[in-house]
Image 1: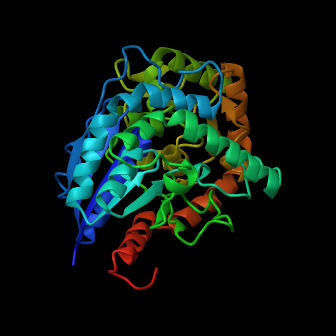
Image 2: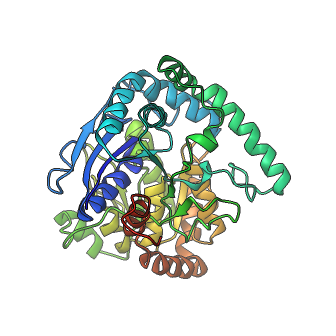
Length: 419
């Protein structure tokens, strides 16, 4: 018998599309779904559930005009970057998001929340609705095997780093969460890592095991399911001009900075185009907006494309290190060159590099065309990187993150006895 399930997520495409994919999987399994989405760049996903019979509710604010959400700080530090992002795009919407969280908890048998959605944690405790935590990046889940910055200093020091980071995050980043909880009569969260980023019910880490091996000290309720990949349905009918460009020469480098691209479109276009020219590689650069098409010198500017469909036609993927793009590139069996912009992107860049499928990580704050061109050249010519990427991509293709996540959720709901 199907259950009523509510989902809530917040962020960019990489934070919202996996939840929409999971929602479809749960509907296909016979459940009734409502999902609340808050897009940091104001995108509207309200129509996404119509074909698959689930309801999408948007709770959106507006990004300040001209504001680059990936350049809110002067220094590259995930803690300060996240703090600035929350202050800009999350805190002003806390009341609206909490109202949506309350509705989800009152109307459903179970709720599933993005690990940053503290309003859903508060509502689930207030109204007694069990909550599943869904992490799209493993770096938020505490383990003494590694620090949250991706370095291993030994179990004792690693634990200290987590303690310090947890204290700073709980006290400095989530002031609005404490204020909200006082308002509704609940005690403040004592540890985001133990109470918000994970759940005693079930914590789903929706990442491929090709990049995220499960640490031995994670509790049984923390489960790695695999990438919640947005499926590509049917044959991909590419824009005719893109198709002709692909046929006109060897596989090009594909260059995209995802949502980051649009916040500084012209500067990013110049960086990518100049790096492509210096590398001597044909390139497709994804940049929504005017001015798409073949610009000569073996460079094509494309609008939004299906990464799952176009990546296999390319040689190397140059990207920002978002969770979705990172895993889509690997699923296609292609090496990566990552120019990390902020947040968890630095961690994904390191994971790709450690796995032997990514060039040395680059940073948006100091990258320039010559550096990027050199990294592209290294990735294009590295046979070891190509073979490793193809091998891990094949392994990843055997995963079914949505199916695994749905099965784990149904175990908790009492619909299965074996997880």
